[in-house]
Amino acid sequence: MNDCFFSIEETSFDINEINEEIMNNISEKEKNGIYDFNDKKTEIDFLDIKNEDQFMKYHLNIIQKTWAIDVNDFDIPAGKGIKGKMFVLLKKIIWKLLKFYTYRLFSQQIEFNAQVRNSITAINTDFSKKLDKIRSELENIKKEINKE
Image (tube, rainbow, N blue to C red; front, top):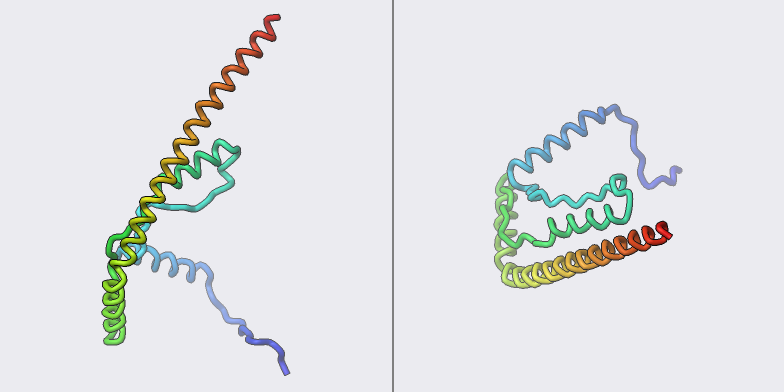
């Protein structure tokens, strides 16, 4: 008796064909507005971040791009057949029932995100100015030591 929970039979398939089909589906959904990211990409690429300054600039840039949450209505894609249309209608009814509640929550979240973004930006600017001042003073001290 085989103790395996399930098994996968070897089949022939083309990975490139599957990948192409996935990419085509994504492109089609982007064209139809289902995947609307508004250029708010949040992928982290640590290979391009070489030091702490770059790390901070990168994340401040991401915060600047993503702090606002989209609370507007979005299209619910039409389903196929009578079941699909009923499912879409059910989704629309549920959305209308919950909208008053979620809108308030998301509005509060947007306000909080804006305050955090502004605070982090102000702290970063303040620390950058202080660090520049310290570096300048250090250079002046080094110059005076070298003169002696």
